[in-house]
Length: 256
Ligand SMILES: [Fe+2]
Image (tube, rainbow, N blue to C red; front, side, top):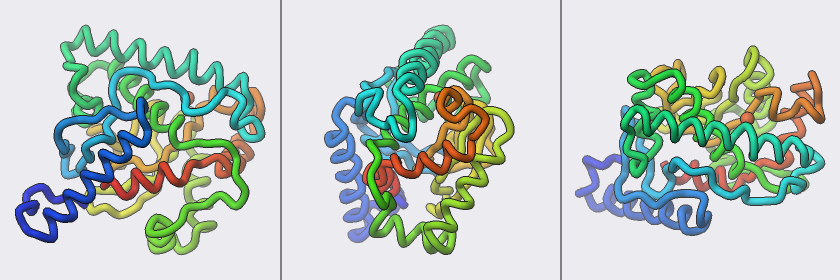
């Protein structure tokens, strides 16, 4: 985890430079999907690495609407991206203008102080942030899809086994009553945790019961799966693992 106050120590400084470089590489590697920001922002002991913050504009979908077809159908993707998510972005910008938010600053700044803003801001800042993360967290289906390297080691350390981790995450997603999200996040001690939030809340919000840097998020609103899966949320969750972009999740894991 980045400790800014220790960055004058050789090892810590080296680690910070490496981590910052990774954040920059992530931003450049995912051109157009992240905004390169000038400083490392710390939100209530949760460091937000430079280059990984989310801006206020909807970024292009990194694949076509039919790319995830076996798991998420084309019509669902199109409606989800162009209607639901686009509306969150539009309403977020309306709320930001009305409430005097400087949209040149990271959206994470607002999320960390969301209790000071309107319900409209809470719902739409969360909705925009969560969906921007969600699109990037997926890619076309691959066989034997799973994490590798230090991320897999951390998952096994935290949850026993990868299948055991998936079971716990699935339970968080299945048991979220109504609409919301399941999360894999790093808490203030950089430990991996699983949890869920209601509606469009997320783990960066000061009002959230679970707090940390979101590494992976799953949308379990019915608009994300109902056309293909109807009431079978569990089937959607199980299939979704086939399209998780573990390289992107690895970058988020490494960045903090
Ligand atoms: Fe959604």
